[in-house]
Length: 429
Image (cartoon, rainbow, N blue to C red):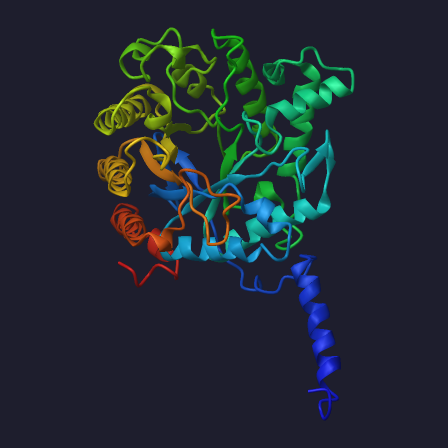
């Protein structure tokens, strides 16, 4: 190879430079030359609409997209997952748009950002656009993973401005509220270095989720969290009037709601967490509400049959609320069955997931508020550090892959062909 190939090294060297520039995700737009005409997903009453047609969602969670896009060696995992999601007819992926003070953090300290991590998020959005998968982007975590509200409280405490070391001070400390607003404004007004589109103007973003699974147990009345939701949803809308906004609720009924006794998980704890499904969801700048489904984590000493009875009642109750009380879409934005529970079986997981998808499909057929479901979580191979007791590589589970693909085919009829606009999915149904 070294002899007789004098042109090889200059050509190889030039190609390497071009590849390096692209993989470092500068302003090169290779792979994005073809403009894709997209519309914003909107809300009409209790339904999502796209191009004037009802839009029901078959989606999934891959929270790891941004952190896996920082490194050039792991970035292909994001493209692989989006490509497979498109082939399965999935339409929306929920993923984190935050990493606060953690490894490869997006926000390294209040209002200070890591450009390399920001370019990783640019890449995620650009790749989603290329595969025509919309993104529901979450802006902070109630949990400790990737910083969360704990990190905000630590920052305020370290700077001497914090009112309390309690992580619930995230919701009421003025300095922390200011940190969060600065973060949100920076995200919404970010100009993507690959597409050239500001996030707030990009229709591939389905919507913004204020916080993953908010809880404020130090104020079980719910007043503290409600005040935060009202302020932050208004703030988001003041910057971005085009995108849908949701809270990120688990769906628990509050302390004054009769359904806390008949629908919530048993033992009473769920109504004392400071969240209140109806009250929170009625906030004027909240466009749709979310519900999570984890009966195996919420129940003690229950068997699988109890989980199944609960989840049907849980889903139907919230769909009823969306129709008759809220007049807003209800998105079941996380669901799963842990493989670490006693007597777990893959057949039980399949049974549970099919029931959730069937209820979602029935809601869609009847034009009801149950707007779709998003499984937690899908990954690709070689991600042992990210897989949890719910995670699956879908193509390694043929029955799961087939179940979700068939559900996409069912929804394509309800959605009047919107799913089939994705060229990767046209031949499947």
